[in-house]
Length: 193
Image (cartoon, rainbow, N blue to C red; front, side, top):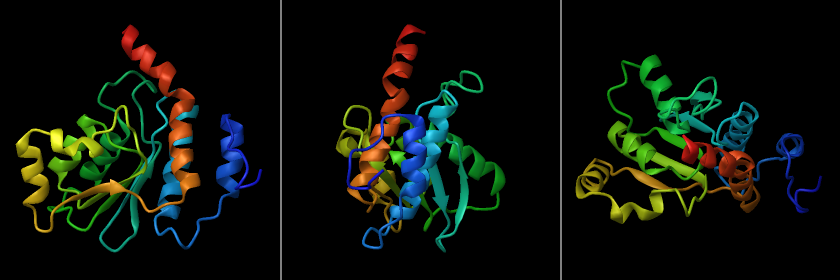
């Protein structure tokens, strides 16, 4: 499948597309964005929302990764959003870390309000999303957070950064489209609960 042609619409199509994609040097976040998309696809394969995350330490080394979102599988857990799963693993494995300044968390989809509050509380230095989420994301609505949350972001030294990853438009679209493979159906499942 051509990188410039139409994007896939199935899990198998996305597997092939992601395996063939080569990070572009002009986009410094392409490699972690690609990994987030692959992890998001893995989450979809397991019956969850298509969201994947990775965490890099201050030296740029990836230290936590995995099939991130686990809301529905292996069993229903309302708190198992992608960023939450990743932060649980980080905090369990790296109990000695007392500051997340310099750490960068990449997520395939803009963080929801619950996840953004967790990331603010964690003090993670930089949080970058691959695809914006205009209907469920909170980063673009930061000015609507209660004042204490913005105070926590802005008064840290250095202030926390929440924003879009510098990745290719193709990967931005992949992050969105992979989420949409399961998102609408799983949102309906939540409504029906």
